[in-house]
Every structure is written in C-alpha cells, then in structure tokens.
Image (cartoon, rainbow over all chains, first blue to last red; front, top):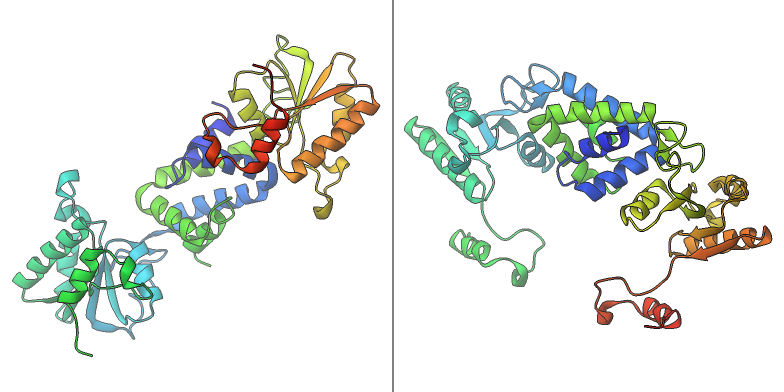
Length: 195
Length: 195
C-alpha cells in the first residue's frame, strides 16, 4: 500500500468519514496543508500519550484528578451520571450545574454484551457511598439503552437508600410544537408543570 | 490549551470538519480507538515525509516518476490536463483513458491572484513540446474558473500548433432529465450527436 493509500485508510477510521471524505482530506493535506498534517500528527500523539482518566469521575484528564473534581467549591451533595466525557462537556457548557460528575464508560446494552461491570457501575456505587452525595442525577441518553441504564442505576441506588433523579423529558427549547415528535409531546404532557 | 483542545483544534483544519465533528472525532479516538489515533499520526507523518511530486506529470508520487509516467505501454500521443491529483485519480478510475497526464496546481483565478505561472502552465508547455504529444485533452473543472483555465490553455496550445480538446459537457449518466439543471441540458442540446 502506498503512503497515500495508508493515509486514506487511517483517515477512514475517524467517525463519520467514508472513502470519499478520507480521500478528499488526504489530498487536501498533502497538496495544501502539510503543516496541518504535521500539527495533527503531533496533536494525536500528544493526546494519546498524556490524556488519561480522572481517578474520581473517570472523565478525560491529564492529571490524576480533573479540574472539576479538584474544585472544592462545587456542591458535593450532587452527583450527575453521564455516559461519556462528551456528554459531561455538554452538561458543563450549560453553566447550570454546580455539582460533581461520574462518567460511565457507555451505556448498558445486553444485546451487545455490555453489562453493568463493563460501564463502571461498581465504581459508581463506591463513589456514591461517601456519605456526602445526597442526590444522583441520572443524565444518560433518552434512547432505549440510555433509559434502561438509568432504570438499572435507579434501582441499585434505591437499594442503597440513595435518592436519584432523571433529567426532565419535554419539548426542546426553540421548537415549534408542530414539528416535535409525538412521543416527546406525550411525555411533556404527562410531566407538565404548574406555571 | 489542554492536549484534548489541541487535538480538536488540529482536527478542525481538515476540510469539511467543524467544531462539533472535530470534538466528536477527538472524543471517539481517545475513548474507543487510541490505536487508530496512533495509526493516523504515523500515516500523516509517513505521507508528509515520502509523498512528493512526479517530475513529469506533477501528481503525488513517492518516486521521481509516478507509476503512470513510468508505464511505457500507455499512449504517448495523448496528454490529459487536470487540476489536481484527485481529479487525475477520478479520471484513472474510469479505466477509459490510456494516455498520460499533466496535473496543474489548481486553476486560474485572477481575482485570487492565481496566474498561469502559479499553476504550472510553463511546465505544461515544456511537457507538450516533446514532439510526440498530438492531442491535449483539457479536463479542468466545468466551473467558471475551470472553463477559463481551459480557454487560456487552449489559446496557448493553439499558438504552438497543438491540438486541444475538452471533455464533453452533457447530461450525467443515470440522471432523469426533469432534475438536470437547464444550463446542462442547453449544452447537451448544442453538443448533441448522431445516433
């Protein structure tokens, strides 16, 4: 395989990149942006080498504790459980949450053989047993697997006498009712709140 | 900037990749495919180091002459002029062309300050003066700039007594006439051929 073909092959491993896009990227980098290719190669190697996981919440971190877990000013009574570092980042960008996080390694998926021990449920149960956490906010996805994961976690937490909550389901901000799917409207109706 | 942010930044330099896609790629590589990240880093460095340009046709090549220019069995009377190695690859994939190529470095664009000497027109005129090339097929894009480039090249070749042709314009294979743009239909009508 030529160096160009090897590059196209490697680019195809990126999520959402097929043969055509990989070709376009390879040609672009070699023809117009060799400095960009070097920068990307170095960033990949650097990140692979230094980015590990926070010992406490398991998000990506270059240090033993991530900046959030190292921040003593946050509310230790709240723990938000998400499926991935990307979900945690989205949550954090809202600026509306002041507690700590616990990042699972994905979500339960019995059909794919993903069991509680594979996504870090044991570590979560250890984490919540610190006597300080008072409410666990289950912020897994609103997909079948995310819901199932939240359900299993809620049961486990309940058995340990811990209170858990789930993010509200409802109509997304900025959407016109006409275009919202019916399941969402039905949930929003059930979960309606006093004005 | 953290290693993760540096990686996202570097991925954003890829064509067609915005902030969201770059984030998704970075998270994916770090969480699920560190081997892929290593492979990509190495492929980028290897390709940057070894891929140069063919001395004769200027396409990407790891050797002084690319495999096509080194192939003495092709038809030396035909020379196909394209805008980029990607265009040459597309041409070659058709399997319908047996001549040699000349790869320009882009197309003329007076507004962006891209002049004939910037895209290798002098080298093209040297290449066609070998006394063997008999027909130059202008396969630049069918955009305003590609057409202008073809026009300028046709004039220069004509002045040197060389015959040039242009790829046929017409209705794309597999398309329904109803959905083809009007300019294309108009051209296909003008260039209609006997059955």
